[in-house]
Image 1 (tube, rainbow, N blue to C red):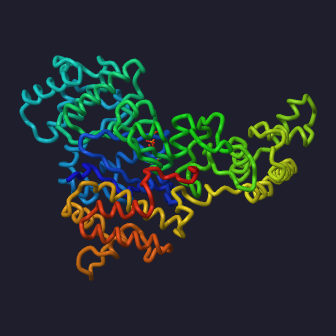
Image 2 (tube, rainbow, N blue to C red):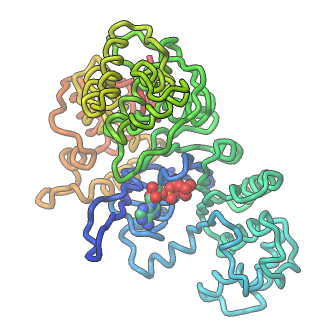
Length: 516
Ligand SMILES: Nc1ncnc2c1ncn2[C@@H]1O[C@H](COP(=O)(O)OP(=O)(O)OP(=O)(O)O)[C@@H](O)[C@H]1O
């Protein structure tokens, strides 16, 4: 049977935002917001995304270096979230983290040999000579010299220190290593060497590795599969080559810097990611990426290309959030004209310029709405303009999360999301035998089962996957019901087939909105 080594399910980590001496909670940073993924033995999984999207927090909470707010982490069949201190210590031997900055992760007063041997000492190996032998051997295996044991961190370059960091993680023979930005602090010239080393060590030690990086090039180099994170969520997971050749989510496409979109109306010229990641304490509604998405879906009523639609929405979002500083634009427009005071036309033109809006939108109705809003901005009524823009330029991406129900069913977005989660979970059971399926089903449903009833039943499965009963589409209900029955009989493959028949191929991407 193939059981993943690490199975992270619905992981959540929130931090309180407090204010004043009493530290009243005024908000919550949703750093990790319902993340699920698996890592198999011997597999390298990449976790990629821009700075601040929650990659490191996913790793530290999955390894319980920080306490998760919610969710479950199963390591080699055991629930890590339920571990006591003793079990946690055992787990720490088997799952190691290598941190980003090789310089600050060593005590400058300890020799390299002492640093690398430290975990052996902590875990009870008393024999100093034996520790020294193991460390010398490992230093050689990471491309250093056994004689380096007596040298100090300042005598090593960044790349060498990262090698030492890997040796330290390997010293107690772990099954899993999480490497957080393993090469981003290093010179480009040594990055490739370290990536080669990671690949070699993985093959040699049969390790599972999670590589965290903001760099798509790095994950392409070493990973078997990649999970793409945005604002606390995983938006897409796929085998590496497929992710690069056929990225499904617009965020992945934007990270890759190209958008192979079939519909010319939606095809942008350049798709560089612009703007910052929004605050995880107040994530945008609907699809979290819609505030920056180059492929944000235009309203059917207008004939505007992707770039213009993005520009109009940027103005809409700005008017509704920070507002538009009319006085600053007026001053800028006047200076540009060499005039004492800018005339309203110049102010309107300056706003269009700032938001990359053409002098006139090609769609007459859109132009009318836009110029009405600009008039209000010029008159100082930014709130009125924001309302006008919101009303005139809606996008489905702000209302609904991607991964919507196919049009031919009556399923709601939540029902569809629940079915997807069930399918994704079943997909991790491919090749599992009956008892393994039953075993995992029991664990997955343990919290949701009704103690008054015996064992796991249909209701427990539905509760665990948030599947309402009945689903609002009768065909979907029949298929999901049959799939659950197959699961309860330990037949995961039959359950997967049933859902495949009903809903087509399971795409590992979250975003189906933009694909024709
Ligand atoms: N202890 C904390 N208290 C409050 N907010 C936090 C804390 N740790 C992280 N955050 C916030 O959680 C979000 C996710 O941070 P995280 O470091 O996990 O992202 P990341 O993708 O790893 O980014 P980077 O590559 O910059 O490390 C960020 O907005 C960060 O500011």
